[in-house]
Length: 237
Image 1 (cartoon, helix red, strand yellow):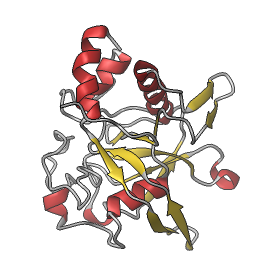
Image 2 (cartoon, one colour; image 1 turned 180 degrees about the horizontal axis):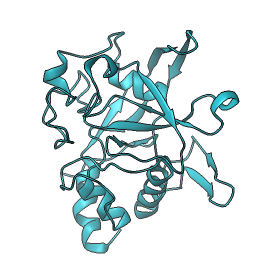
Image 3 (cartoon, one colour; image 1 turned 60 degrees about the vertical axis):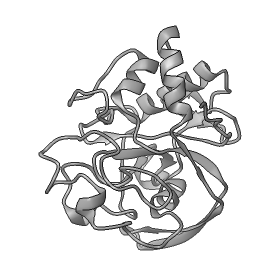
Image 4 (spheres, helix red, strand yellow; image 1 turned 90 degrees about the vertical axis):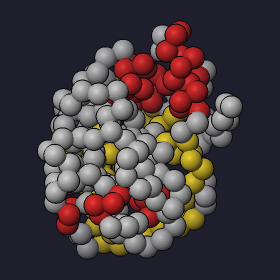
């Protein structure tokens, strides 16, 4: 992160995390019909998808198809999102969450460090549902950008109604990469993404919808990410 950007964006980042309380979430895979429950420890989650202004401040480039500071960054692979997390951890003097072997395309997560990471998909769904069992936290047009209202592109973050925990754009706008491998026995290292995007029809934009793709090669203009951390973020006034 550049020194000048450091001062500007650390304040933005510090003020944009939401504390997610301890709880339990019920998960389902529509492909296999499997259901399971996951206990969630308290963590911090960014209230918006990472925007292009923040991504550019950390990585010093903008890969997005639709350009705009307050638009979510997109056209990023899973490994791009992981590298962003590590670089942001560095800028804060925190421990990296990910060890990366690029040659072997192997990434190891240490879930107990104090750095920044992608949420697990269980954390993501739990935060999206805000402690409920609902597939959406309101009428879709009021809470999300999707095929019917997006004008065939991403939109600036934070314009739609947040959920009960103050999280914006969890549904629609861009899909969001999560930490998890989807199903290693069937799909190898494919990683999960969640939430639906600007070009998806209503039936796909739900808290429970799961998709997956290759972590190093797949990137598209309706897929971005948001970040999480185990450590408390102190707000700067």
